[in-house]
Image (cartoon, rainbow over all chains, first blue to last red; front, side):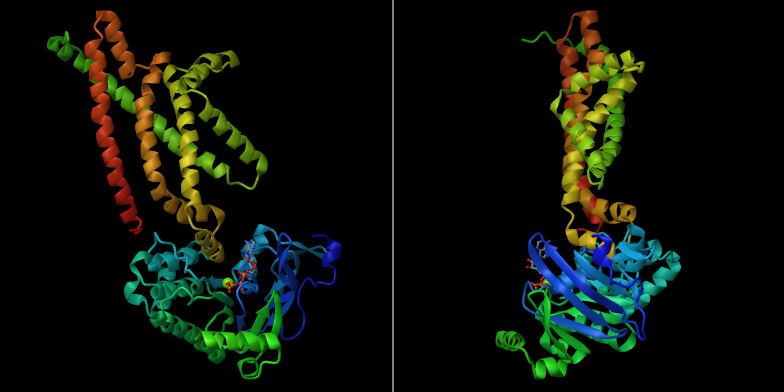
Length: 273
Length: 222
Ligand SMILES: Nc1ncnc2c1ncn2[C@@H]1O[C@H](COP(=O)(O)OP(=O)(O)OP(=O)(O)O)[C@@H](O)[C@H]1O
Ligand SMILES: [Mg+2]
């Protein structure tokens, strides 16, 4: 990645308000397969944006890049006005080093489709690990915070259980508490209900509703549950082939989709239900 | 049928039991070195520095492709030519520790690779440091699947301690040889050595299996 390529990308985002998350001409490819093609996407502070789209359209990749689980091949991602994937060096942006990544990553939390709880730690220990060892909280503070969050997700009574003793819905709620314990500004949810039995999906979506109602978080969510997306999102982005094919408010996108591909996708999803 | 003499058996037993202490000490020390060094080898192979990875990889291959007894001789007899003069015990522990470290590193490697990618990603998403991720998240989960292999090599190192007799470490085999050359009787000492090895190996193997179950339960992974 040379400096010339990065010219035109500001060292810091200016303006009012500065978006909490900003993808600028972000490209991601695996070998010759271009997964995301010059993606531009801004998410305002406190906004809830949902990504929908067919399998392989790059939805997960968007979240993984933001969580720094994937490197990018072009463009810059900004979080809270500062470059995430890059850092300023003199007058230009250079690829971020580990220290910069660790500082910026602290603004972001993520919940995964398969929960990814640490199986050898109890629910409480899962929620205390980061706060104690990354944020430097005392054990007592971290414990209070973790207990509060486990209560918020309705898991207070299971705090001393290991994940293997919890149902999928319960594990996912612990995972949400664990991510929230790091006090991120941005929360990412990647199909957090896809691995769950239908009857427990509600307990997880209710927790997310609660987060939206009670916390001033910026959220980016990938989901296949159109109903949930419709009544929780401020904005819905329909991804197709690594690009945003169409975006708008839930009413616009679900009620009156303009693009043919969106219409096809939504009617295919409806039929599947 | 056999010319087995019980009086002689009782006479040499205390001497062999004393040597058993040395055998256990050699196996224990060697294994402790191998357990720690093996982990270092396994982790070194996962560093992003290609030169480190390649050197460690080649060293492991070299150790695994040459006989242990040669390595023992090498450390003990060739070392002094480079000005490194080691006692039989020190040389023996280095050789056997290194040898088994190479094998254990492969066991660890398998264990580390068995930890799902999602665990790394969760650790990254919580911003855990690399060291914390390894020692608190990944290694505890790599341990249970490694225990069976680690147990096999514990029994293996124990059974290989007789090779240390070639440089004069006074373990069981060395003592049995000494008894044989003093008395010209070999049946009793060698039979006793076999029985002692058996009596230690079998319960150890069973104990390892129990330990494995216990660790899994302790880590909440059952
Ligand atoms: N590590 C990888 N190596 C190669 N190709 C990959 C890798 N990860 C993802 N891809 C490819 O990138 C494309 C986008 O993947 P992504 O996981 O973002 O899709 P998605 O929209 O989340 O799909 P789904 O709805 O099935 O989860 C797919 O074609 C996928 O095969
Ligand atoms: Mg996906």
